[in-house]
Image 1 (spheres, rainbow, N blue to C red):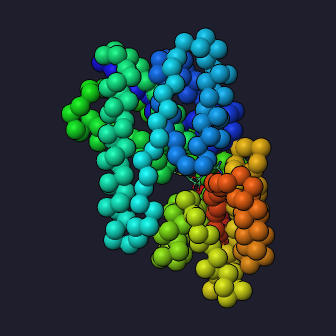
Image 2 (image 1 turned 180 degrees about the vertical axis):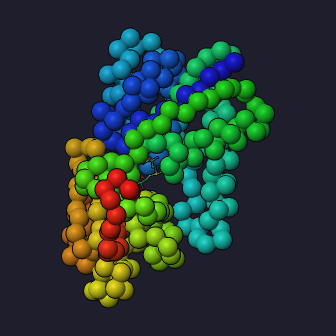
Image 3 (image 1 turned 120 degrees about the vertical axis):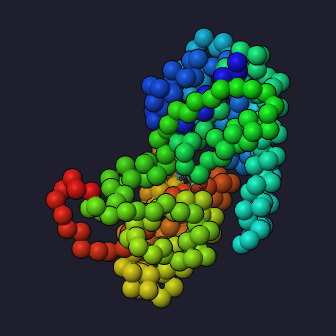
Length: 271
Ligand SMILES: C[S@@+](CC[C@H](N)C(=O)[O-])C[C@H]1O[C@@H](n2cnc3c(N)ncnc32)[C@H](O)[C@@H]1O
């Protein structure tokens, strides 16, 4: 039976690769690198560097494929449908890669950015491929250091306050729905539109929410940028740095925590 490893490789720093990930990489014959857009070259280069470092034997193949284009304009009710259609096209590509490139007992791997469990469709797409009943295979998942863990580590913060929940959401949702109810700490990913700006308009750190932002771009890479502070002070700086970096590199990946001020009481370790 064919075997697939879904390997989380960390979110930019090659030293975030776990020993488990290295072991899975050493067990792999064919690596599938699925990339997209302008960031493709940089991110593919990072993966190739990892392979060179951890597979000095060179006894593997790399097969690159291009991600299908997604309907980025789809909003509101059309958005889930656009994602489903994109996932279905991805499933066709994955099925072809696995069927064409792996022998009946071959082992392949997808090197997944960050942690495969967080805003990544590799697992769902593989399930879709299996559901269609094409090439049979077994797969396992190796967790990776996510950009969220990196963000917290680089700012030297915890994500939750004592015994409180935190939420991870997208820029799209934050922009559309505002600060979520019932949480004081919100991690925002996939934010092409700087959704945090909606909370600075009143010059009051978010309608009196007293928001603090911890922002990080290109975390773990030589281009890393970190900014933190009260939102109204930090926002213009982030806007400027973000625009400059985006113009320089042609793409940007950023993540941030919005933290509402609350009295944080409780014994250390309760959180
Ligand atoms: C498709 S999601 C993939 C997340 C990934 N699975 C993870 O565990 O971090 C891409 C989003 O992750 C965040 N991201 C990934 N790598 C990052 C990095 N090195 N620095 C800042 N944000 C990053 C950004 O919010 C980006 O829009």
